Length: 556
Image (cartoon, rainbow, N blue to C red; front, side, top):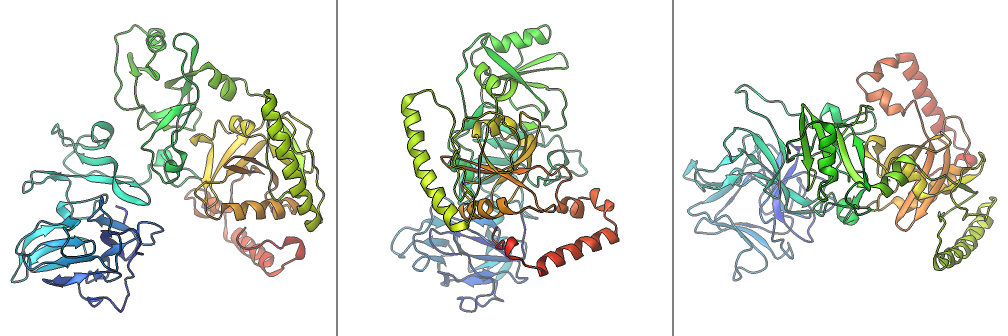
């Protein structure tokens, strides 16, 4: 259950109104009132709050939410202006949402009759009932769940409506309209719970019910580590997001597309992947051994991957859903078909790596060698623009500028200056920013571990395109952190920019960060009280001794 705070929001989706405040004093119903009677209505920031103050019903804006939304009435039809819209219980007992006027058709209706009051319970259930007979439920939101399974709610076939009660994901994190994933009972009657994609493709199954209990882990232990706190869906190696902007909003509906089209036949190659479970919906041809299984996929142009286990060949022609990649170094059990070009350039024979140098950069850019004369011309023009810009910044920040910013990617001896990295080199070093290389994620964006061709281990901090503060942080880290030299500070090695991509490259911390030892159930035992006391003292001394040499603002 995604119940995260004391005040939950149930509501009618709006385009422009903000979420309701639990302690508003100017609501139509008093904050200790949990019901609305016939003829009463909610509008604007007016709300109904359950007796225990746990749940709140009202209009909300599905962007930058502070409270957790657990039920939405009008998922497909947002109101235009909450100040003129109403949630009203009519005299005939029907609860409706009106967009602007009572003369216009409602944009949502409970289709209820004879209800005299609407009551919001501390279980999160909105109930329409007859006040003279409160035990008689005329309509309840538990019969129409949206994306959250609350205690007391049921996933089932509703005997009254003859419709299945199921959960449907939001379209993305800013749009509560129905998404592509549903959780429901197996319609085949196997007593299993299924997650389906587009209401047809099986994405996950619970297994058979043992008539005792089933424990669900919010974060399966196989998928979490010291740096990661959530599972994240990413494209497989050799594939890219069709719509990166949608993926930034956690909407992967568009799926992934190949970097390079398959040649079909023996010109393609297979990349071994270690997975904790294989994709759903394979088909199994009759073959004799693993080599024939490989040949069956190789000779079928639509085959995307194969696996051979327990003397069974499995092939995948369409989407490969619910693949969980392992990072424990085990041998591959899934063989992904890729263009030989993708495997050669990203995995088998990485190109030489370049580390060009620059000091005191506010904005930095990487450029790599192009064969076409027109591309070279564009790079020369960019070089002039950025060189002039950096010279200006160097003058104002009393720092040395190396204007040779546009070298090709090749290994050079170590330098004390800040380095400009080629994005293709970073993609190779991080295995194309794969999940297995991911160290964690913050407000700036994800961090991946990588290894350069010379063996140096690095941490690549990749600016998320949806990060509103990313540009400010990027500039501050480049200007300030690059000039700091201290044994307790992670060294900034360089940066990389291409188009919308902005990355910072740090030295890799093999001992991980302090929070790992403070909060990890196993590692925290290694910190005795004396060690913890010294750490606290060190932090306090650092905070109390500001220096002009270390004038880092809090937002860095």
